[in-house]
Structures are given as structure tokens and as C-alpha cells.
Length: 452
Ligand code: AIR
Image (tube, rainbow, N blue to C red; front, side, top):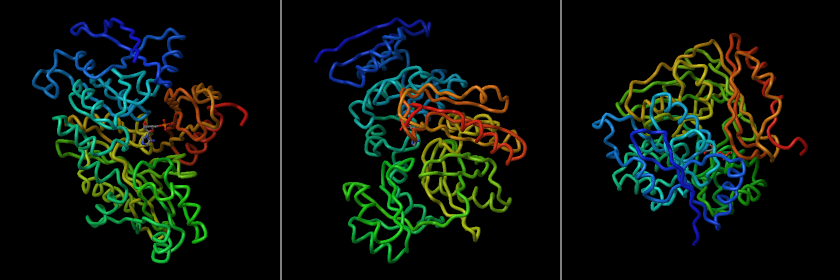
């Protein structure tokens, strides 16, 4: 096994002797490709280190004991996508440093963090040595196996949210079962192991049914709506013919989809952001409008249900709670996301304290910030890849020239059709005008090849 090393001296921290180290391995094609791409541009590399090296970066520190030492914490985040990137941006404002671990080097968070390690975060043999350099470990996705998080806790690391919470939340059937036990309103659901089970569920819950993977599904990946018994076979095959654990939910005929970001601090305090309305296409969130145009009574009801749901799973940090509002004004929980969430991106510019900053405050036990809107209305539109291809967007001029528009580009190396490449938030007065303008600006922005 041949390793190529590049070592660079860093003068970033006068009190610490630090190296920025890159290791590439010829057999790791993606890494090798990244290395070539970056070295061609002459970029300075961030750290992609082997076990133990990250520890040497902070050799003056006694992990987890930053308070006693009077240091600002170094927070580890498992995952390096846009959610890690935006957490890192908020954390750095508060003087905290972030270390990320992701399977690839070229990911949205790597450009903005203190250290970035390339490695398989589901492997405790990789994850635990990485965590040695961190004061506490947070998440940006729900895909790290809870057994791996348990191993991290067993090794003495603080993980927020806890491995116990993640065991409940990352398996959607477990999540629903916990919420139901706690008396919270959820859509009807059943575990299914065979095609026969799905037919049976259809006769009990009625059609349409939504077949879902219990774990690892997001942005429509891992969901299939079954209109009638004839559609069962196709949905079953689309979701792996029983190779993954599955369950079904009754389709909820909703009038609106609502979401609330709930923040629960390790010190026991909590805060809720305004109730928003989300609009999905093909199971992917496209538009979020804040606040939701519903009565104050319904807002209070949705907010109370969301808070109850996060309490039911003993969540810590920010949690996204997705809900359905029915024509009869019933509110049912769709799903919990144990992390900062797409439906809360508008809070960066539209609320006094963003979901990202409050997440950092909550996991550190610092006082939570005000979640109130600073403008009467805000609209967030996701900028999805229109095609596969390069990641440099076109059509951004008008958005950049509008003083009420805030453009976020995640820095993903490649556009893919339907991939979240960025978002745009517009703040304003009347909601209908804000929505129309935000959609107009977003429509001109194009990620990916021009021809399909
Ligand atoms: N993410 C996590 N769960 C759901 C979502 N959308 C975010 C995380 C993750 C990124 O999406 O930030 O790292 C993955 O995006 P992609 O485009 O690489 O699939």
C-alpha cells in the first residue's frame, strides 16, 4: 500500500503546532480524483488525516474538558454536506471550531471547517480516533448507525443527540411507535416484511398507501406511493424487494404540509421557530413559506405537537418536525428529522437567531437565541440541480442584485438532477408577493448542463 503525503505548515494557530496533511491512496479513486482536481488548481489542502493525527492537532487539549481549561470547544460533526457547512458557518461566528468527517474530501463542509477527515463514519475504528480530537460530537444526518454512535459513547465521547435518541429516530417505524405511545398524533402505520403484508395493510388502512424504507430514506429516496393493489409489486421491487426493512403508512389527504423547528438545549431549555408551510414535489421540499397562513390556534397546536414530539424522543439540539394539516384541522406528525432541517434554512436571514446558531448554542448549553421572525414574511426556495454536470450556476445576477434576496450555494463539486445545490431566501412584507418574487428569481438559476 503506497501512500503519498503532502505536509503543509499552518500558521493559523500561533499557540499550536499544526500540520495540514493530505494523504492520498492510489486505490481510492474518488480521493485520487479529488486530489488531482485540487492540485491542478494549486489549492491548499485541508486535512485528510489517518487515525491519531487529528489528536496531535490539539495536543494541548484535554478532550471534553474545554470549559475547565477556558478554551472554546472544537465540535465534531459527522457528515460533510450542506447542513454541516451551515452549522460550521454559525459555529465560527461564536468562535467555536468544527471538525468534520465525510467519505469524500470534496464536500460542502470541507471548505469552511477547521479540519476535515476523509473516512467511513460508520466504522468505529475510523470514527473513534477522529472523535479523540473533538470536545463533543454532533450530527448533520441521521444515517450514522446508532450502534456506531453507541460505540462512540462507550469510548467516552459526548454525542448530541444521544445514541439512544438516534436508535429511536433513525428507524422511522420505531420513531412512529414511540410518538404513538406518547399519545402524539401520527398517521396509521404497519411494519411489512412481504408483499402479502402490504396487500393486507392496504385492506386495513385503505389505498393509497405509502411504502417506506425504515432507515436511510430522504428527499424521496426510499418512498413509494402505492395507489391500488396493482401497484404493490412495482413499489416492492423499487424499494429492494424486501432486502431492507420496510413499513407502510396510510396516505394522509392533507390540505397543507407544515413544519416546525424545535430546539432543545442540554440545559433543559427549549424554543420553537414559527410554524412554516412546506411545498414538496416528488417528495423533495421545494418551497418553504414563513409563517404558515393558518389561524393562531392552529399555529399553537402545531407548535405544541412539535415540541411534544421532540420531548418524546428526548431530542437535543435542533429537530425538524414535519406535519400534515387535514381539512378537518387535524394535525398529524409525518416525520422527525434529528438535525437542522431544510424547512429551517429561512431562519438564517429571517429570524433573530438562526436554526444553525441555536443548534450550536443548544448542544453547548449556551442560552438560546430569539426565534422570532424579523420580517412579516419569508420564502425559501431550494435550488435543485436541473441536470447532471458542472456546479457553477448560471442566472444568479438578478438574485444577487435584489437587496431582499439571500443566495446560498453549497459548493458541491457536481450538479445532479434533483440534487440540492443551494437555496434562496427572500424576506418581505406581503406573503403572496414575496412568494412570487422568490419563485421568479429561483427559476432563472440553473445548475448543471444546459441541454438534457
Ligand atoms: N441531508 C441530510 N439528511 C437529509 C439531507 N438533505 C443533507 C446533509 C447531507 C447532504 O444532504 O447535509 O450531507 C447530502 O447531500 P447530497 O446532495 O450529497 O446527497
